[in-house]
Length: 357
Length: 94
Image 1 (tube, one colour):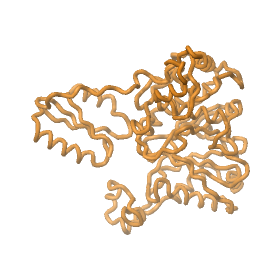
Image 2 (spheres, rainbow over the protein chains, first blue to last red; image 1 turned 135 degrees about the vertical axis):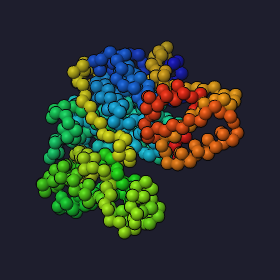
Image 3 (cartoon, rainbow over the protein chains, first blue to last red; image 1 turned 90 degrees about the vertical axis):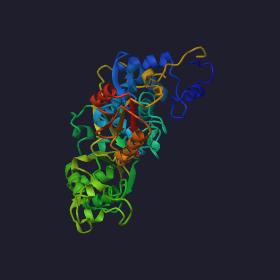
Image 4 (cartoon, helix red, strand yellow; image 1 turned 60 degrees about the vertical axis):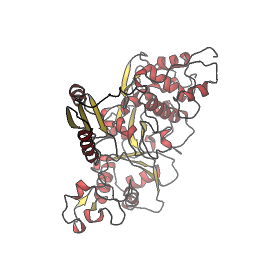
């Protein structure tokens, strides 16, 4: 590419950006990112669905540079690629669906502080370079190596702002519970990235509950309308609990397992309340409805979220404020699961902070 | 950096592919109709099959189905279609 012309215009015209200006991926900048990864540039990390572009370390580095990543972010971006390209994540479906789910990346472990990632006030918002650019790099990879371009392969009717960048960290220091990564099967002290096919966060306000159960009932009313009030059989569902809400729940004896079991149980609805065309046109799909010969009087309970284990809890956000963000997952329960990968810091040779672009 | 080149963020295998050459005629050809398992895709393909039989003389019309629309067709299904058919019609989405 001829960089003599305006590089931003040139890259945008090639269709390889998200519409915002990018850092020109010069050989020098990309070389620094590859070096900081501690891996060979031609090492293949994954094939990115649905087009199965080859995500080599160098291709990942080109996109990371364009997104504005510092070289030392590379191990996190690489682990993010591994997570979203895992078969269990089904990036093919996530990228193609008319639904509005984008990979949300959740970072746990010591790498959060090393890279100055935001887990606190404004956790889903702007202002922190690592959150902003790691999430953006992974989105550019979905586009440039996976082929997911809106209106082409990506048929999402609405999408949401997290399609630009969607990366948060857990505020482990303010959590009364084990970190998400540990509940996902990793050792305490491991740095990990979890990929979750996520809708936009629905932030629920509850400043008046003084008992854990009361707060959970408030949250149930938010969770109950994911997709619509009669949709059922959801898969993984994320709750980003603020430090204040987490303290209230833990102080009242609620841990993530007990919370999940309670939410799952109370979110079930009888068949008679899920009939299409009654109280709204939506309802149980035909193949489920036909199992119940007298649906109008059938009280069989149908699960909103398929299993208690589909609830994923983490703590993040500012220390002031009683809020919990409910983040719905892609609605097909057997398709996309939250996938967690360990960040390989062993090969990391970059500086601990700073680093030039 | 005026004389520098930028590295390519895409993969050459991921660039848009050209469509296959269109056949002159459907007569004597084996045609596969692939249902991707989206709701009512079978209704559409039933009608496509009727029209194909009405208007052309294909050697055979084969019906195949993906297990789910949300994932790529399994490798063995792709291989089977490649082996047994000359023309593929896929019922995409709803």
